[in-house]
Image 1 (cartoon, rainbow, N blue to C red):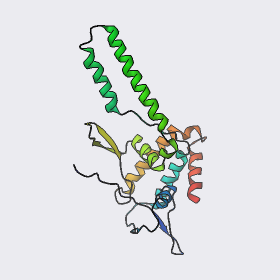
Image 2 (tube, helix red, strand yellow; image 1 turned 60 degrees about the vertical axis):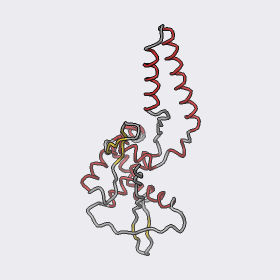
Image 3 (cartoon, rainbow, N blue to C red; image 1 turned 45 degrees about the horizontal axis):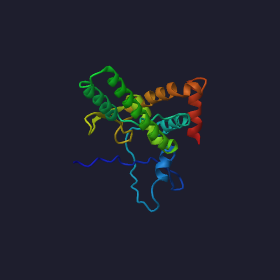
Image 4 (cartoon, rainbow, N blue to C red; image 1 turned 180 degrees about the vertical axis):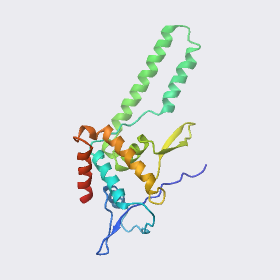
Length: 208
């Protein structure tokens, strides 16, 4: 079996006048904070047409939406649901009465409900609500992802990398507009009076 390719951790930062390198977005600061003390890092200047201020604006937008985001987690896999349905279909072919078929359907539905309830009780929502998860959520919902085959025969969505090396400014402009639309329609249209008010908040966060 081939080893899984790990997504490389990339932290964007700016060199200040005093020689200190500062991660300016909350997303990058969190990545930096999670690095172990004494960890060696590679600093490589970016030499392409990406606008770093637009990069900061993108993550300021994410910060605005992240505060109000309530993630939804699928605790029962599509494969588990499929197995229950296939068991029902297979057994129903040999059940003599509709009463037994009804009983089996109710039993399987109750089993699914109990498994779901048990797994939901173990979820740590605070730990699972991360900026990385929110970035993945908004980009996938905006349509910026590739479809990969999964081991169970289905498919998974893998968001595009927005690193400076992998995405030119023209494409990043499209990502910003798409993610802005998702965040606005999903939560922030109920928080801000209009999009101009949201833009003002984003500008304030960039100033910080």
